[in-house]
Length: 279
Image (cartoon, rainbow, N blue to C red; front, side, top):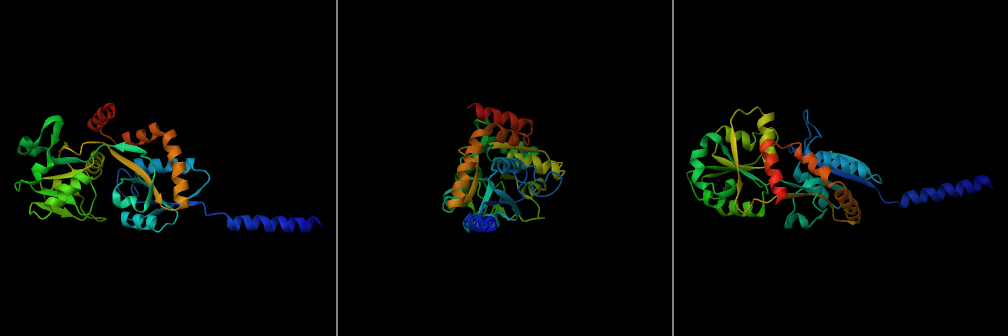
């Protein structure tokens, strides 16, 4: 009788396991320092990397796997409605169509207009109040060459200005691929006169690529608000459940997420970040 009961119980447990939903989150990541770092001495130490580690630690009901690739792969994975998630996404109407977003887990400094410091005098007439630049007006001037990353989404405002001017000869788009020269390195080599980049990326590239050129950065008028970063998962029942739990982790650990970001700020950027947060 005992053996029969054990057999029935075993069958019951197996049937439960067979019907239990798959509870593994597959975290996609890309190499986009210092938010996400997939190689080198700072591997997995970017501010979004550390945020992802915290999510993985707090979401104890799930198994966790990692996959490294391109942002295009990550978007395809999430759109496939499998159990994929990504930490460190910006949000727009296109992504809203297939991504289940969390509440923002961090706000970061906005994109800055970056020039070589030795060219400051040339740009003086374009710098207004609060050390900000009128990008719309600057893009009209064919005497300044502008370099930007092709198909990158900056902000809706910046993207619109680039779209309105992208056929002009003094705008140079660059498709950045692995092992290719980055946009900051090209600016240092005087391939163009100015570009747009996040302050943390500028600092990271300058330090890790041993660039001797000095740069100056400016806020962009009408695009000078902190940028929100999100966790995104597939738009299915699994993704919606994960995001609910992710939101709880975010609410309970806001200061820690912010500390991960501040680790990568230089002195001037830390000061600017405090000023933004004080508004």
